Length: 112
Length: 113
Image (tube, rainbow over all chains, first blue to last red; front, top):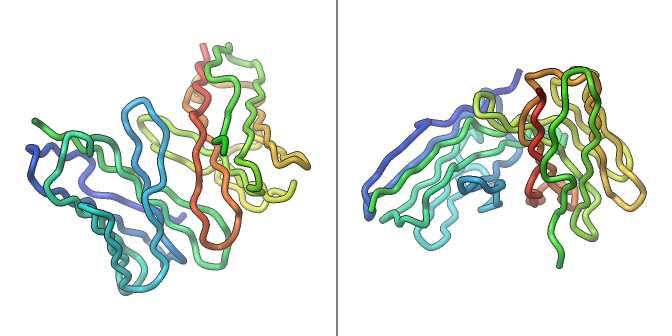
């Protein structure tokens, strides 16, 4: 079946360091979404990427969608303690099936 | 506007029982998706409903079922509960178009003893 893998599984960084999580799909995606889940909370939508090679920025966060639409990345510049949480990518399959396969998630811990 | 609400927030059941969870989407949203979240398996897609019709289904046994009402509220039912069904069950509402963000509810924490 379709799989979406994320690496790394865990990441501990010092406050101020950069952080990147990578998302890889076994099949071509229609679009990809990114979510953040704080400890004890629920996933919160961050952004959606639709076009091949698309790059979007939100303040210190940069999101990229690969040319082949099979991979994506989230990069955080100069992490802050408020960035703590688990970051998930969610890929929508081609064909307009409205079914999102969530990645395995990357848990980020920021040390002050 | 009000967010996604899920009831109950916490539930304790015993093996063999059945359970019904409820999700009220954001007003105007016609799509409701259900996910199971466990530490070992992450977020797994159960099914998605749009305008009272199941549009997509994940790889869960038939014990897991759902429905959606005309007001877009959705229910999920799990029959013959097993220990492995203990999880956080999340619903997400969206407009249901090709590219629409999902808004998650706070979830229902189900514990099966």
